[in-house]
Length: 481
Image (cartoon, rainbow, N blue to C red; front, side, top):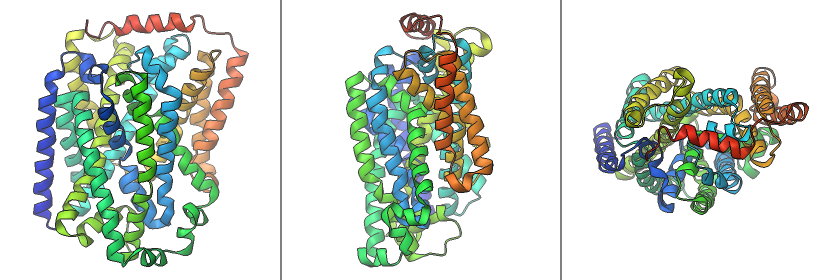
C-alpha cells in the first residue's frame, strides 16, 4: 500500500466531510436543531444514518477479525444487530410521538418522572455513550496504525480529531448527512472487498477448503460453542436496543411511521450484509493464517492484497464505519450531558441561546474522555461486549418493562439496573468460560429483580400523563419557541 496516497485520499475525504458539515450547519438555529436535527429527518436520512452507525467498528474490524478466527461466526455480529434494530422499530418506534430528547427521559417517563432514576440512568447512558465512542476510536486507531505504520496511540488521536471537527461544526445535521454518504461508501467498499478476497483465494471452493472444518459449520457453532454463539447474538441485539445513539434516531425522525420504515429497511439490509465481514475474514485467513492479531485481517487484505485503487477505497470505507458510528455516539452523549447531567449538577436547564455553544464545548470534552479510555485498550470485541453487559443490560430491561408494563415503578427500575451490573461483573470474573459474555444472565437477573421489586413496592405517585407533562415542562426551557 502506498501510504502517502492513502493518507492523501483520507485527508481529502475528511475535508469533504468537514465541507459538508459546514454547509448543513446553517440549519442549526436552536439546541433542538443541533442535537436532533429539528426532529424532521426524512426516511432516506434516517436509513442512511442508521445503517452507517450499525456498520460500525464491531461489525467491520471486529466482525472481520472474528470471521478470520471463527469463519462463519463472523455473521453472528450482523445477525444480532439486525435482530436488535428490527425489534427496536417494532417495540419502541411509538415513543417518537412523546417527543423525548434522551433515553433517560424515556425511562424516567415510565417510572413516574422519578428524578433519582432519571439521574442514575443519565449517568449510565453517558458512560455507555463514552464507552461506544471509545470503541470506535480504538477500532479506527488500529486501522490507521497498521495501514500507515504509525504509533497506535497517535493513530487513535488522529481518528478522534478527524470526526470531532465535522461533528462540532455541524451537530446532528452533519452526523446524518455524513453518515448517509458514508453508508454508500461502506456498502460499496465492503462488497468489493469480499468479491476480490474470494477471487484472490481462487474461488469459493478454495475459500471454504482453506478454513478449519469447525469454522464452516452452521454459524461456526462447532468452533465457538452454542452458548457462546447465542451470547454474542444476544449481546449485540441488547446493545442496539439500549444504545442511546439508536434512540436518537427515533426521537429525531419525522414521525412514528418513518421510524418503523427506516428501521425495518435498515435491519433487512444489515441482515443481508452480515455474511460480508465473515467472507472477508475467511479470505484473509486463507491468504495468511499467521496474522499476529486477528483485528488486522481487514487492513491486511486492503493494504497487501487488493489492487491499489480498490484498497484505498475499502480502507476509507473501514474508517467511515468508525467515524460514522463515533459521531452518532458523540452527539448522543452531548444530549444526555446537556438535557440531564447539566440539570443534575446545576439544578437548572441550560439557557436556550447557550445550548449550541455548550453542545460544541461538550463534544470536545466527551471526545477527549473517550479518547483517554481508548488509549488504554486494544481489544474491540472484548471492550464492547463487557461494556454492554455491565452498563446496558439493565437499561434494556428498564426500557422493555416500562414500555409494556404500566405497573413498572421507580424501585423496580433501580433493582433492575443494580441486578444487571452485579450479575455481569460476577459472570465476567468467574463464569465467562461458560457464557462467553455476561449479557444473558445479566438480562435474566435484571428482569427477575425488576418484576419482583415492582410487585413488592407501591405504584409511582405520578401517572404517565402527569409524568410526561412534567418532562415536557423541563424540556421547553432549552427548545426553540
